[in-house]
Image 1: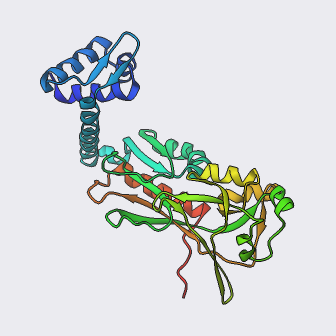
Image 2: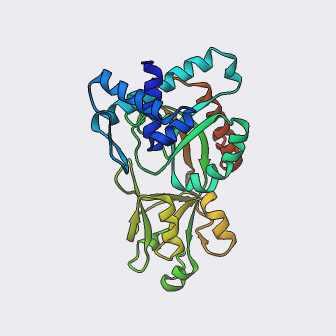
Image 3: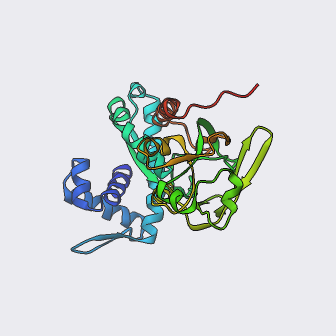
Length: 307
């Protein structure tokens, strides 16, 4: 048994959920893939996959082995790529996690350009606002808004999200148009709360106008932990929103959102790309980072430092 082939066959079976599909992607027969997985189980003396006539399920041992195998195969691929002429054409799989609105509005629409330039890079894209354990979940990098609290990560600031305050016309008809941010603390007004994963709660918004500064807590009928749901709640008239420009622009132009407190300023939200310090920056990860920097420079460039 070739241990590399067996490991690759097992990983592909788990990825595709089928021995037949795994065989097709590996250009092997189904019998060969089945035999490789069986030989791997015999060598390890554990069952990795429970098989029935209708489906297969990965065992607990299989799930643990899968995570280790994916890392080993990725490291081997990176080593071969870095030492060969193929480094000019990076290949392999990248596991990336990004916030849901950023994925929907900016990243995914631009990915055809990335794929055209790097056709041999396969991206597994996690779309969430949750905290991701990059090591345990074998994620190559994450893109996150806000200051990073995990100082163990290597982070690159790739953008600054300019923020504004918005509300739907229907909401303003019911609650009235506030003239000062302090009015959002009144009983008649509501905000849409956003539950930050790092804090596990809704946090106040700081705003400034000249020498005056305020922190708005507000009252909410709904708080969410997902950016797309947050925007949808505001469009439905559930309350006032604090939105990055890329999320508000189209809705504001169509009259679906009205900007409030235009003479007040909010600090931009930094956008970081982060990866573990012990994760080798492979060619495929490096070209993705460079591409993401260029993409965000067009949508939310890093602000020049104040003098």
